[in-house]
Image (tube, rainbow, N blue to C red; front, top):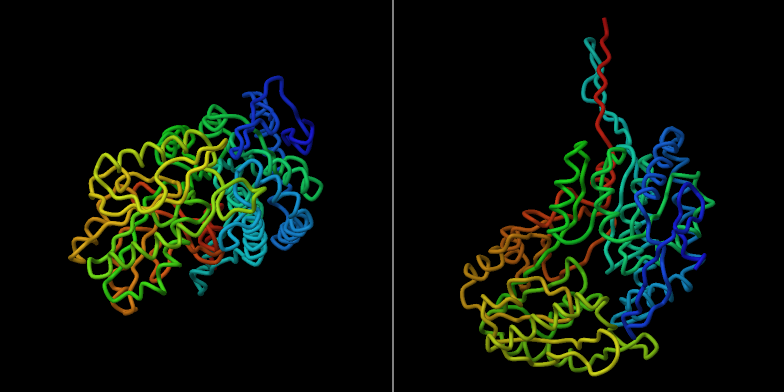
Length: 473
């Protein structure tokens, strides 16, 4: 139990109460995790506030050096962290196309090391005989990070590392479904940071709500559902917290009739099923022109029939859905699609074994109004919808309240790019989907969030602007 204590002000901290962490592959308790109280949260925030002046006063190069040491420490412990991640999240160590737990750990290293190359130079707006006007970027202050269960460590690093580099201090709360890898990593890097610069508290929704409303937290970074993001936005109004919210999506892809199905099907499958479909920007609604609809459905079903789903011990392509709530939602959406008359080419029902296993499922001949099309499933199930007119397909792709990502597939790049530019989403891909990288900004429009992450665009979200005007004469 001591291995998974919270980290507050540089010290391991337990709690009187605890909660179970479940292995989704067998529904057994892995261990128990401390249930933070309001007092624990207050201690963590107070420590962050106390550590802020000295940490923000360090030079960018000094903070950069620490960030690079964090990457080295995580790399030295990748094997252990990947095993722990697999046990609590469910993803295989390697998995389909090598996109399992080791992929997440590799992503951590890539994002940390790229972010460490960024800088926040002073911008000169005017420098003449009258005045010099400079724009400075100053750390926003104490940051609260609230992360989900699909990529527990990677998304924590997306939140924490730019905050640290910008000179902020951070209090992190991982999902109660997957707190263990984040806690382990935090304790592994604890000696690299002054006490209070990074604290990790564990608990359920009340702790996240407490962070959102806390008067001594200056910014919340949240990745999760739109409904929770709205509640955070309301709570944050008390002290006008800065917000970065990466919320839900229901990404659409439009496949034009000139698409080479043999070349595109593998990419479409991989980007729909990445992390067992439990990825915010995964391809979730596939609109295919009637001329190649049957060919595409058959190609996707063929790939789906060739992959395996099971526990990590069996070295499968895909693992379980991470938790029972999400598992039940996927099962419910599948049943609703059946009631709507959809055709299931593969899968469609849970595997008859312990754990939250749902096979990769390809659904065709599904009406637009079906819940499986209109709601984000966040699981290994893909509806393939036929279209005749491209303008109709575009209208359907845009006719949702969210807008995280979208894509267009075609042999004609210029035509695809022109159509992709009309998608109402934060990231538009051409002949790809769900591929993100640390130097390209990522965020949503409409109800998919506020602000962006990654690269310099993401880094400056951890800062406030101070305009300095220096009179001359």
